[in-house]
Amino acid sequence: MSVAVRVIPCLDVAAGRVVKGVNFRDLRDAGDPVELARLYGEQGADELCFLDVTATVDDRSTTYEVVQATAEQVFIPLTVGGGIRSVDDVARLQGHGADKVGVNSAAIARPALIGEIADRFGSQVLVLSLDVKRSDATESGFVVTTHGGRTETTLDALAWARQAIELGVGELLVNSIDADGTKQGFDTELVALMHELSSVPVIASGGAGAVDDFAPAVAAGADAVLAASVFHNRELTIGEVKDALAADGRTVRR
Image (cartoon, rainbow, N blue to C red; front, side):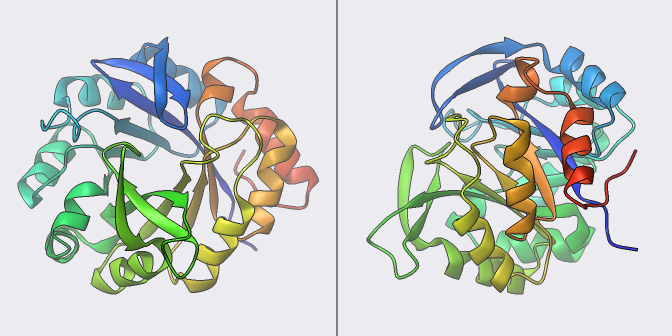
């Protein structure tokens, strides 16, 4: 039997509230993370992603109290990212209910962090969060950004993904900054390229706007699909997305 495609709502959190914008800018309030976590758990989400989108920008740690309150509402895996700089940060987050952690800016600044986390907690705990933009400055045509998409690095996104897998990450969360919040569909070219190089699961993120947008991302190679605003705005439910994936011949958990 084929592995089920995971449907993952994402809570982008700033100052204790869920926010959403377009291309990571013009953030607006989208609700309470605790209430939304409860809703998505009831709708049948396979996992939940909690990203403190201003932790790195503000040079602070993740808001642990909000993470714990969110974790208490769900009985599915919870991935937390934002402001994670050390193995001690990971241990503290696990103590507050996180099952997995996502790293981005700190891993780019110090790639050894990936191995340190993987060695202590196992690769299955570690997700590399990739905020990717199209760019003519890299060989692949895709460049990695940091600080919530605000700062463009010189890293080729595909080369960095390969390196991070070798260092010990257990999953790639591939977010297209160009597609983020546009509701024009996932960047399937980016998903396909990441799938081709990856020996670990790939989560497609950025651009979901309609129920028909999810199946093409899976066809391109995504093992899981992540979305935010379409769920926050009640435009789609988790069940509707799973129905569409099932109709496309994909296995989903009910």
